[in-house]
Length: 228
Length: 228
DNA sequence: GTCTATAGAACGATAGAC
DNA sequence: GTCTATCGTTCTATAGAC
Image (cartoon, rainbow over all chains, first blue to last red; front, side, top):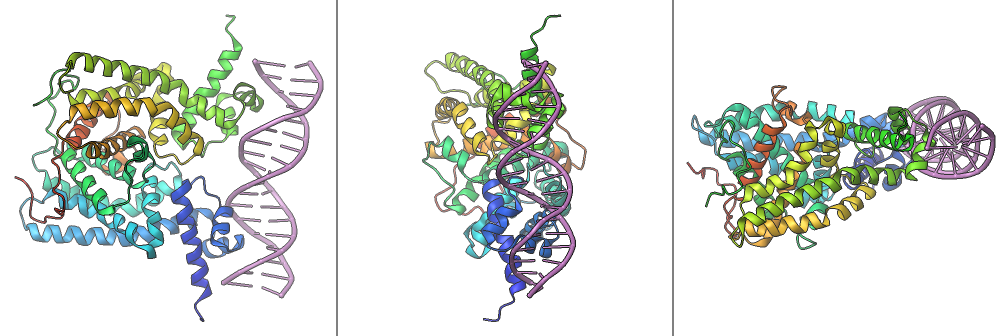
């Protein structure tokens, strides 16, 4: 069929690495496992990528760059619709979460393995991953933090940063896959219906970000203090 | 001084492993790094623990068992105070989060390294870790899910399971440490004040769990639909 | 661009002296 | 209970033939 074998091998390696990173974590995956899964030779990895670190970076970059472009487009639309007024909160959160979640229902994107890779990355101690994430997310963080500030003008910026951090963690954990969910629900729930999960996730994070402010030294542990 | 050298070596190994697991992740840490950090011999690890897997299990078990006892005590107190009535939500969340968070301010507990280990564990693909977590958390999940059901009787049990899952993820990410927080806040915030972080975390999760229910097919993406 | 062969290092684990 | 020495394996990476 005269297709370019160079591109094919490179893609086979990226796809195999992505699947294994999703299942086992980045650090636990060796190049030998990757080449076995991709059915190529060990030397091909070094020929196409140079080193394991550069392969990791390539796996992340391939998906994150288009994801971030989509995020920016959605954020642009929200800002355009709002004019000078305050921004609506849920759509901002959705603009952050929907682009990676869309991969889950796209078989051409390796069955959405990357969503789990991305979830894992947020707590990955590996220096290559940390550095890659810093580079690939700098602009995203800036733009979304600015949007949150416009959406929640009644909250102090520090408080918004805390809550954005918590919200990112909620999303990361949900993206990692459903093992913990199966434990929590004793096997009754799974991540199958992507759209339903996404909507629940957006609703949870939005509510968290809109939580009432705590008084300065008011303790949480009011044993009877539930608001009816 | 006549202190027992057996206990000392064993503790040195556990402490060193805990610190390295917190910094690098469990999977990235080798026994040779552990024995270098603990300044003991490689054979000592196999003498005291038998294998790397059993060392991992011992590190987890040492802290999680007392943490879970404290969780149960706090939950008992909440249930006793509520009698037959509904349970207050925030104290339940606090009963789940405070016991591990307490370690952060306890220098005798290895400077709270374990809190980060625990956060990482929730998304750790390593089979030993997954199995250990399943064993050590089965009872905790059961009791806290039952408490959540009593605290949020207006929500369907399935919805509560989803939200408990999201909340556990929020907590796990916050426990992993503050690298992402520093990125989000551009270096302006850190995890320093444990009590303040805990209170913010409880408030965020409680608000998320109390989020209004979505209509069956109502889309999230209401571009203008922000509630004033 | 793809392969075989192998270098060189780090790994978990164990045997056996003390 | 602690040590040295070492086994067998696996790892990343590279050299060189085709």
